[in-house]
Length: 389
Ligand SMILES: Cc1ncc(COP(=O)(O)O)c(C=O)c1O
Image 1 (spheres, rainbow, N blue to C red):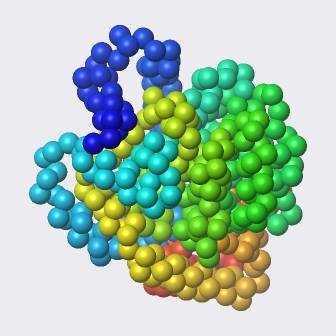
Image 2: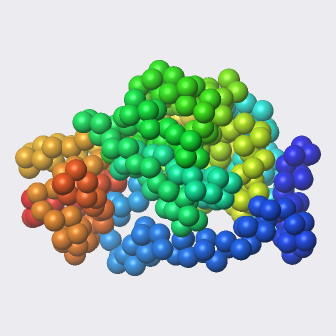
C-alpha cells in the first residue's frame, strides 16, 4: 500500500476522527465548527429534496443518470467483491487509485477519491472559502451550482459570468473577470444545464493562463459523452504541472450514480489541502470500487452507452423540432430547450403524467432540461410533451 494512501485513510478512520480536534490543525477545527452548516447546506440542496419527494415515475428524466445501468463486467465485479465486504476497503482504494493514475497518465499522488464527485466539489468549496475569507468563486451562469452554493453557505461570494450567445462558457469574459478576490475558478465542461462544450484548445490556453493566477477547477462529469473525451479533458494541464483540478465521476456514463465513486486529478499540493475535507475514498465501498475498476477497463460498454445516449437524444431532438421547439445542441446526456409556458407549471404537469424533468429560468426565459432515458421512457416524455406543447 502506498504510504500516502495509508496515511490519508488512517487519518480519516474513526480513531483519528475521535481525537481529531486534539490534532488542532486550523482546518480540522474549522471543519468541526462548520459541520452543522455543512449538513444544513446539504439538506437545503434542491435536487436532494426534489428527488426524494418524487412520486413513482414512468420516466425519471431529471437527474442525468444513465438509465441503461452499469456494464455487465462491473455488475459481476460488484457481486464477486461482496464476499470480502466485511473487510475495510484499503485494498480496493489502493487498487482503484493505481488504475485511475495509470489510465489518466499521472502519479498516484495526483489522485483523490470521493464518494461521488460531489464530495470533492464540497471539499473544494470548503477549502477555497475557508482559506481565503472574503473571496469569491468565479463561474459561468447558469452552470452546475453545487460548489458555489456550498461555498456561499460558508461566506464566499459568487462571481457569475453569463454564458455566450450559444449558451457556452465565455472564456474571454471569464479570464478578464479573474481578480484578487477570486479564490477559485469553477468551470463545468460539458456544462450542466446547457450541455455545451468549449473548444479544447481554447480551454487549455485558458487553464494555462488563469491557473498562473488562481486555481482552476474543471468539472468533467459529462466528458465521457463527448465525441473524444481524451481531447476535451484538461487532465493534460495537470500533467504539465498547472494548478488545475479535474473532477470526474462514475455516476454518469458508467451508470454508478447510486454506487458513489468519483475522483479528482490535481497537483499533489492541492490534493493534500482538499483531503483534509473529504474521505478520500473511505466513504465509498469496496464493491463500488471493484465495479468502478471493471467499468474503467470496459471500453466496449462505454461505446455502447454513448450509442444508446445518442439514439435517445436524436429521438428527443426530433420530437422537439416536430412540435416547433428549439433546443441547445448538447454534448451530454441531457438537452435544454426554451419552454413556451411557465417552467414550474410545466414540470408539475409533466410530473402528473409520470415524467420527471427539471426547469430553469435565465435570460428572461423559462427552460426545461430533459435527461436521456430508454427509448420507452423517451416515448412517455414525447406523449406527455405533445399534450402540453
Ligand atoms: C456537473 C456535475 N458535477 C458533479 C455532479 C455530482 O455527481 P456525483 O456526486 O454523483 O459524482 C453532478 C451531478 O449531477 C453534475 O451534474
